[in-house]
Image (tube, rainbow, N blue to C red; front, side, top):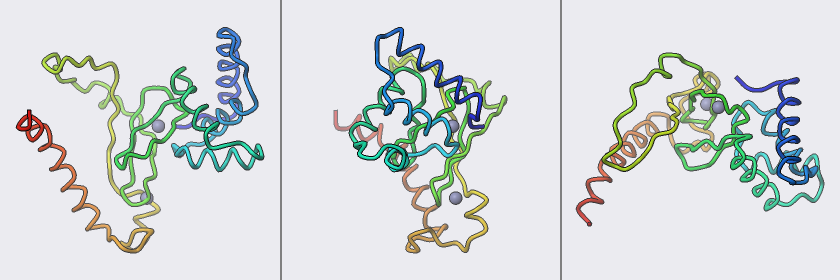
Length: 184
Ligand SMILES: [Zn+2]
Ligand SMILES: [Zn+2]
């Protein structure tokens, strides 16, 4: 689950200490962006964080917000979550956990599951790739979207079509390594 109250303050304090140790000024921009990510359970996108930051600090630029987010990710204070539709989302919860992703509204919910934590990882030595961590994304339709008729927010693509599109995408993904090998 997300981070609340005392935990946010603890995390901000931890960040303050880190900044001091590394001689980085804890600017108001950095503090506000961090507080926004920690206080949002919904894995906000950079744009959503930017809008919220604008409401708190007038005149803050998009570039500043993006730069602060990158910095927080590189310091391990927050996590960057890759999303099926390639929009990066930011997660104040850096504990090992998994995600439920809604295919209709892109909502991302946290999920803890011991049975997912004991997943046997594949041997990737032949790819010269060292796995350091993993996150399971389970896709489906959230409670809010299941209440709605089977139209998406744009109204143009139905739920069934989206699922079909998604299945196609998955097929394409599994094909691509072969195709790449052919090219070589
Ligand atoms: Zn949804
Ligand atoms: Zn999460």
